[in-house]
Length: 180
Image 1 (cartoon, helix red, strand yellow):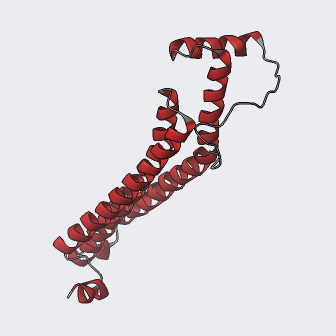
Image 2: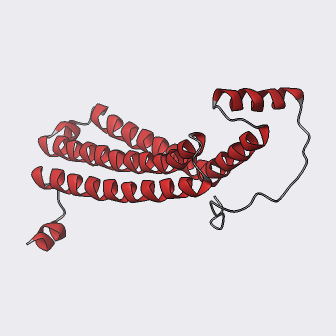
């Protein structure tokens, strides 16, 4: 989203473009469905929404793919360890270690999913603002609001995870000392 676009900025720049009949129909249908009166305004809003998505979608998709791959690999490794016929593999100490590893995997996955959810929210809030006929400037304020919400939720998630680890005595020894 361009940072120098102002709400009251005059729309003085013109350019011509050619569209196929199906592209024009898609724009007209979208404009009609969203109660936008002119094709020019519909194209302007679609361009603004496209800029928001283009600036964020690839990173979000990449992070999501990394998360699913990491979760899959760690889950399979844990399941493989559990299913081994090793006589030592099912000792109480090894089972406790597997429980702790599984717990840590669940926490890591929760943290990363929360992060992805917050990033998605930072894309969708300004996108929805534009789709609701708010100005580009309003969409930027929605983005700032989403960023503030994201930081607050991230902090709360960290606190919740810390409390959960503390409850189950899974804090590293240096974190326990820092707490006192």
